[in-house]
Length: 329
Image 1 (cartoon, rainbow, N blue to C red):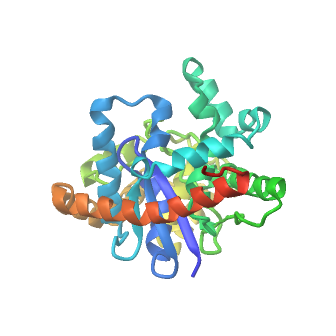
Image 2 (image 1 turned 180 degrees about the vertical axis):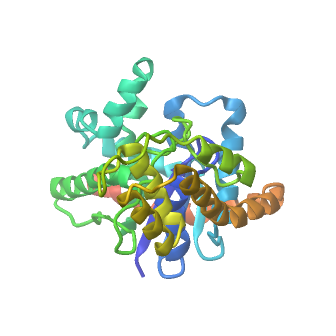
Image 3 (image 1 turned 45 degrees about the horizontal axis):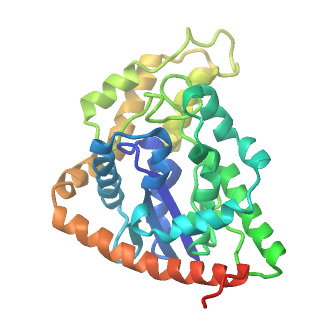
């Protein structure tokens, strides 16, 4: 049985991008693999979250993990900061990561451009912490969204570099896991490349139908196609991308045909898109409401999950220390 690991930053409520980019795969693979799914609260610190809301954000992600169908009896669910061994492995891996390669990552350059007043060391070494999360359990596969592919490639590089430097075959080189499909990246409703909380262009898993309808109705569009079979502008392609993951093939083909014949009506497209998004999110939203106030259950899940994760983490850190030459007197 292969080991699978992934996590989501606890920066607020989860959205459609989180679900189709990661959560849906989590629930599919948990019965066929040894799975570790964590809430990445250390990773969230790069944006300096208000201490008053940090725990609430962790609770939101935990609740939504469970509501989306991750089974704590089958998978190991834990909070990243409950397994502090990751900090030591992060430190050790940073000794094998170089400034040049870290500063060239797309995500670092993008965040540095958007937030030039907050280019912190944690942001620069984000890929190293992600590598520590993965290598701590020597994962075989990582279900990541398309925007995280580069970070996963860096994890493979760090694993390979460690093995070569110390003449061992200790760390595996993990691969992306997406059931043979292309990695999914859900775009935003504002015409931008990615749906995200910080961009303010997302649909949350716990949103009610009216809110979803309102957001989709406001989604950016253009004047419509001027010629048959023309290339869609980004804002329209984004809507079709979302449609392809929430709707049936017949629905998608219907609107493709309407586009290609210049007969598309964006009002009809948005109405259908909103309806199909609501079909996906309603069962999840109902389960969130059932789980979110059951503090005893949530405590049990993370306490048991942390203990299972620590067992794996302690072993890895102990063996890495030995490989690097650390010895007790």
